[in-house]
Structure formats: structure tokens, C-alpha cells
Length: 500
Ligand code: BES
Ligand code: ZN
Ligand code: ZN
Picture 1 (cartoon, rainbow, N blue to C red):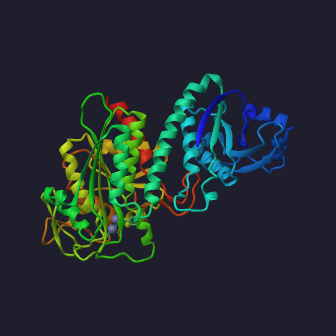
Picture 2 (cartoon, rainbow, N blue to C red; picture 1 turned 30 degrees about the vertical axis):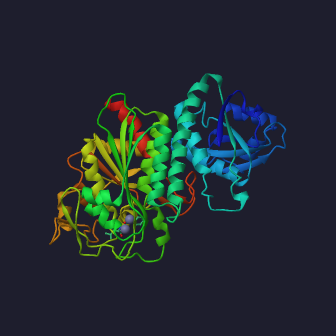
Picture 3 (tube, rainbow, N blue to C red; picture 1 turned 45 degrees about the vertical axis):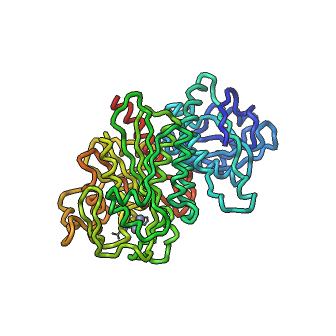
């Protein structure tokens, strides 16, 4: 979708449909002037109670080209007091999705809430671009009917005052980059595991490396075994699909400084291994690489935005399968850190992959380590789909990430990592065991990971509940949510501002 910033009058901008926002308290001057040319239709709708400006209320008016545009989409903005960037994203997401369903090629809007509420102009433009691009996303790669592909609107014209155009353009650019990187992550996660193998993740990383001049290293099974990644390689033993460790570095900072390390769980399919999962919903386990997808999406957006930060992204990529040489429950593996792990349940594979990847990033002496993983079903039980589980050894870093969550709507909620939970992951035969029983499953998984992070400031994000959407939400269609990209970009943007 192209987004064009135009100056002048929304009424005069050619488009198939114009979005007009209305608060419960009333509309903008611009809406009033449009209503005059409609001989008070909007007023009449409001008087009759057919349209009240309630949040997410929609009403379609046909104007038959008199004046341009041909149609109006009246959208309720809710009360002015509750209006914020999340509401902007939601309204634009749903409006653009409706327009997609109507198969209209172009739409126009002015800045939502402008002149009536105080939102930063650049941020509002960014949120509008994000909402529109995220809301019209559909995964159509495997649909052979061409009509499925073509309905995405081609052109969004954002019509603003001359004096605001430069700021709006900056917001639109930023919003576009971030939303497209999120959709990129969504594509990776929605792709089935016979298509999106670890080798294909490597190809994706190569494409990013070429496009943005990033450093890329890829380690193969044999090298990983020699290196001593016994935990990660333990998981990979059951699959014929070659596992890969992908290490992608972005040097955005002017000075060579400590990088922020991003580690993403990249299990391209989680069958559970010998501790096989039940068949119901097993097909969804193609998104068990959502952490890795978020890391690739974040690096892509960071490179496009030229964020002044050094990043190292690490993806331990493998299928988790019950092949003939798969690890068995009770097996002991030796991790890269030297610590031994008793594998009680081969379905708790994510923490085995992450253990070695987390040890690996300590060689970069990182200023912060953030891992993202669809790690535990327990997190889905605890927080559902509305919050990322956050666990940490550093409250300052956690606070910064939490704040970015509030700003982006990719919200986090901290769970405690008290020493008492350690008891649950002590093994009788090895240093640690990979499951801690049913109580506090998300916490004991994080307690396990903490053994591999050194003393570096570290935040673990359990995205098991937030990476997949069962039902359409305003700017998050069914399927992969692409969670993490918007959160991390916001965090990194704030982080470089405060740490330089
Ligand atoms: N990938 C799953 C976690 C998951 C479950 C993600 C549901 C998304 C939705 C993970 O590898 C797993 O299987 N975890 C087990 C751990 C248990 C055996 C300790 C779980 O949560 O059941
Ligand atoms: Zn599993
Ligand atoms: Zn898994």
C-alpha cells in the first residue's frame, strides 16, 4: 500500500472513500464543512441517533461523486478524553480492513482527532500508517484464486495542513517501516513448516544481510556439535531437517559499542518430540519460531530506520521431531555453558535451544540481552493473549521494555523470578532439569534460562499467548500477530535516546 501525504482539503482529494472521524462530543471543523456540502446528513444521522460517535462505530455513506470522494466512512472515535494512539491504530486498522473487504483501490483521511485532542502529530501519523498497513494484512501466499490477492487498497492519501506535512511525512515513514517489518514477521510465522524450514530462515537472513550490509554467520549441525551446543543439538537430533544457528549483526551506532543481543526461539515446528503433543492444534506449532521472526523483523526495521544502536540477533533454528535418533526423556545433555541438563520432557525444547543461544551471546559482552520465545503453555493460561509474560534479572531494563509495551499496545506483565522457584528445576542426576512441574510453568522456564545469561541485564519475553490470534482484532488479523517487532523498535528508540 502506498501512503501519500497531501496538503489541502480532504473534500477535494480524489479517492474511492474518505474516512471521517467523529467524537461522541462532535466532529472537527473539517467534518462540519464536509457536512455542509452534504446538506447536514451527518448532523441528521447524529440527531436521529443512528450514529453517535461511539468508539469503533462505523457508518457508510454513498455520495456518488458529488462532491469527490465517492463515499464516506464515518467512524466513531469515542470520547475525546479516552482518545490515544492505540485507538488511532485500532480505528485505522478496522477502517482499512473494511475498505479492503469492499475491494476499493484508494482511500483518504485527515489526521484523526486533529484540532480537537492533543496528540503528537508525528506519532498520530505513524499510528495511522501502522493501523492501515497492519489492518489490511492477509496471508494469501497459498491462495490460488487471484481475487484473494487483489483486494488490498493500493493508495492511502493522508491529507493534512501544509504546516504539518513534514512531521506527518516523518511519522508515515516510520509507521510504514515498522508495520511492514511486522507483516514480514507475520508472513514467516504463518508459513507452514514444510516451506519455512531452518534453511529458509537462513535465506531470509541472507537477504537482509545483503540488502542492509549486515554481518551474517550461519553454523551447521556439525559445527554446533563441535562448539559444544549439546542442549540445542539435543533438540535437533530427532529431525532430518538441518538445524542452523543464525547470527546476524547490525552496526548502527557510530562507535563500536556493546550491542543489544536479541535471541529468538526459532523452532520451525514443535511436535513435542518423543513427548509428542496431542494432535489437536498441533498444526499451530508452525509459529513456534515467532521469537526468531520478531528478531529478524526488528533488525530489518532497525536497519531501515538507521537506528543508532548495535544489535546482534541470534536464532537457534530447528524442528522438534520424534525421529529415530531423537533424545529420550531422561537423557542428559551438556550445554555450551558446561552445565548439564536432564531432559525430563522433550516438549520443553525451547529452553534447551535458548540455553545455548543465550550462552553464545555472552561473548559479545552485550549491554542488554532480550529473548523472545513462544515458551510455555502456562503463559497462555496466566495472561491469555493480551500480555507478554516478562521475567528479568534487571528491573531497569524491564521497566524500559514495559514502557515500550504501553506505548505500542504490545503490553508486558512481569512475573516474579524469586530464588524459591529454583528448587523445582533441580535434577537428581544433572545440574538442572528442563521442566519444573505444573506450578508456575512460565516462571520455572525463565528460572532455567537465567542459568545461561551470565550477569548481563536480561529480559525474557514469553510470547506464547500473544504470537497467535484466533480471531480478528482491529489491526491484528487472525493468525500470526508479528508480536515483538513494534515493541522492540520502540524500546530501542527510547534506549538509544536515554543511553547516549
Ligand atoms: N512451544 C511450546 C509452548 C506453547 C504452547 C507455545 C502453546 C504456544 C502455544 C513449548 O515448547 C512447550 O511445548 N512447552 C511445554 C513445556 C512443558 C512440557 C514443561 C508446555 O508449555 O506445555
Ligand atoms: Zn515444546
Ligand atoms: Zn516449543
